[in-house]
Length: 572
Image 1 (spheres, helix red, strand yellow):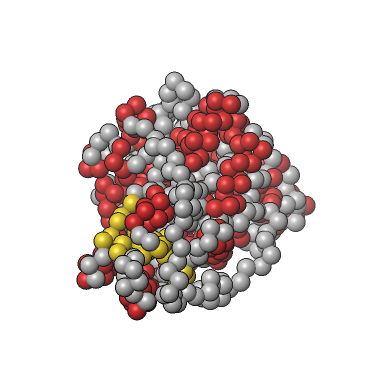
Image 2: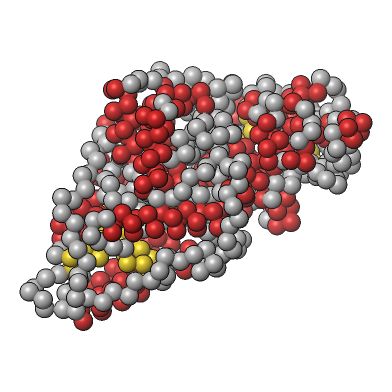
């Protein structure tokens, strides 16, 4: 043994940063040498569980590769390096342990950030088995949330089943820990040990096709990595002061600054939620403190909430019946029908625009996610897991707890106390894209339709459609589903009475043609013109903090003394 020296292995996972990183600090305290490792786990690029989509599509894979490369560069500036494997973690660690033993520098510790869901826990179990067999101590560190698990004012089994109660308890009875400083001295790699590091893979190495040039329309033109993430945080707060108007802009659809865009860096651990919190608090002290600055923190709490919910309920978040154990008999798994949604060919322009943006860029706004989820489940009647796995595949910012927690929520089998919430696609489009600029950006075949008419092309006369160069069923699809409650708002876009909701099964004139399916409603009576609908007036009113319960132009209640935002998927 080389002077009795030892090494610690730090396995990076969804914590691809050096700032505010307790794992990194601990590794540098535990041993004479530190071996930073990242594994491109082949299981992350296999098909999804139920419907066999690519688990990681190209946009997120590119962001991941960029993030790992940036981490490697940052380690090299500290006279260290990142050892990269394209293998499952326990085999990679076994290889390193064998190399260290051969170089007479035994491994005395393995450190990693603790995760909470099924596949990630299985990875941890195999690492623990390996380390137990080699008498190596494992250190699991909680590091992904704003509030540390140990600081919650309740046991995991008592995590509240509504976000409002969770938020109130945590804000009043817990504290956010200070940001952890980087180690004063970074321990080197063991110089007498041959480590079999691989090159950082390309997309083709990972079994994916290369991406074309970045789409100029994207609202997320950023690269992955800690350096870029910290720069974005600095620009959003101190460079542009955009954070001071987050309340007014967060439901936007076009451009880079309508929202923070922090979520992809948070999902990969390139930026720490506690560091964001610290910077927000500094901004509030030095510039302005208002509802907008608070709402960013509010959204970080949603992210925490879904992680703690997954910790409480375990695998049930992935079950068809969700954490509520609620069975819905008529959810369809018709993949041909689902593909119309996934590819942006439903014939409902606001839905199609959002789905095309996701497929082309890996990004979709908060407002878009809530709407397309509602449409898939409540209008098309599809199994929510189709949407969850599609988002898992395509989203740049996929976080397993936030994604599946949100889809449980949207399907009425999760933490939403109002399980019958249903969004009105036409009102949502008219509220958040009143002139149709967003739809026009992504659904280019409708680009000639002026103003709000673009949201309801099936209500236009044959003459109008011909004038605008649109042929429904040919260069743009007829709508798969038309919900009765859309009629009031569809009439408002055209100032015509050519839309028929009423009792299910009605037809539209002027190009809508036959074969348009109607869902929901049934009585023909119109509910109030709000952002979302309930299947029964008796199932609850508006108000509170329910996610997606309208926006600044919706009909929700006040939500609290500070003007707490209604809605708010964990998406910035």
